Image (cartoon, rainbow, N blue to C red):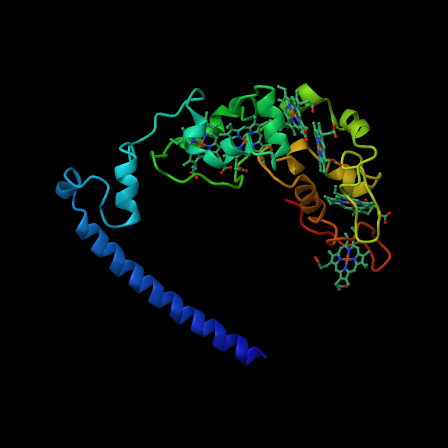
Length: 226
Ligand code: HEC
Ligand code: HEC
Ligand code: HEC
Ligand code: HEC
Ligand code: HEC
Ligand code: HEC
């Protein structure tokens, strides 16, 4: 079994090297095919994806003078789409209320830092890697956990494999829950299509997936919490 795995991995490595060599060859050919002096005459039919993109977007590669007033949707297309995609109820609900990007993404210092080296045409992350949303802004409109807990008292979104249901805004009292209080953005991503799954991921930082109970199988042991 182990030998087989090794053989597969080795095959994959060789294939990866081959792909890399081919890609490099293609890239070199592409670069030679669209030398700068050729680009002005050649409208859009340049070889290679990079050349096509450059032809589509004359701003590509230019530095961005980012401010909180920048047109966020130009670059963050997937987040902008979540505001009109019915599969993303949170994005749609906030768009309907006319709430803008920077009403939630309020941390200007972190945002400026993230955009300091951004050039037009750069591909932004589609998963959050930094905190720029202050849960206090959610609370200022919706109320705190205790208040939203009243809205979700009947929710079955968080149900484990044994049928135990927990209100996502009100976990049972317990030392670890109190030591690590949940904040709105631990579970809520405005641009997500699956809030219950995101919330379950949060629980799974400590609980085994699909099991809320503790202490029935072994003594309590700590797990890392991000
Ligand atoms: C109602 C509040 C809200 C609004 C409005 C909002 N966002 Fe977000 N956004 C969030 C939250 C919450 C997250 C998840 C952050 C986290 O995990 O810390 C997020 C995540 C992101 C991320 C990280 C990548 C990702 O998709 O997870 C980007 C980029 C982003 N938003 C850009 C935008 C842009 C651009 C707009 C406007 C078109 C916008 N957001 C509008 C709340 C909001
Ligand atoms: C010119 C394109 C462009 C514009 C305009 C722009 N961004 Fe970005 N943004 C980016 C890129 C590229 C990154 C990724 C930077 C990096 O990874 O170093 C980024 C990163 C981010 C992140 C961090 C995502 C993460 O990794 O967690 C947030 C949040 C964000 N942008 C929000 C905004 C908001 C809000 C606006 C409007 C005020 C905006 N951006 C305008 C290109 C842009
Ligand atoms: C400027 C006020 C404001 C801010 C800031 C805000 N919201 Fe909202 N939110 C609303 C309004 C208004 C609605 C639509 C009415 C409602 O459902 O309460 C809404 C709707 C929602 C919904 C229901 C979406 C659905 O399924 O219909 C959720 C969930 C939500 N907000 C969570 C959040 C979270 C989490 C944050 C912080 C990241 C946040 N909101 C920030 C005002 C706000
Ligand atoms: C920081 C770690 C941590 C996180 C995150 C966490 N829990 Fe817990 N949870 C525990 C621990 C540890 C216990 C055992 C009781 C105690 O000592 O707090 C527990 C107990 C429970 C219990 C009671 C189990 C029993 O045997 O009576 C339930 C139900 C529960 N958690 C549900 C959840 C849900 C649902 C989430 C996600 C919304 C969650 N927990 C997130 C650590 C965590
Ligand atoms: C442990 C994860 C988790 C945390 C933390 C959390 N939420 Fe939620 N929230 C959920 C889930 C899951 C739902 C969907 C419940 C359902 O649809 O059955 C929800 C639903 C909501 C709703 C819609 C309620 C309705 O009318 O049905 C609002 C508003 C909301 N959350 C706001 C907040 C705010 C504000 C905070 C921070 C104070 C917060 N949430 C913290 C997981 C969480
Ligand atoms: C249904 C039985 C069961 C329950 C309930 C259970 N565990 Fe476990 N747990 C296991 C098994 C099986 C293992 C792997 C074998 C071992 O290390 O004992 C394990 C391993 C672990 C480990 C070490 C490996 C790892 O995944 O990090 C930790 C830490 C842990 N459990 C914590 C918890 C906590 C905290 C709870 C309650 C929130 C809990 N367990 C509830 C069965 C359970």
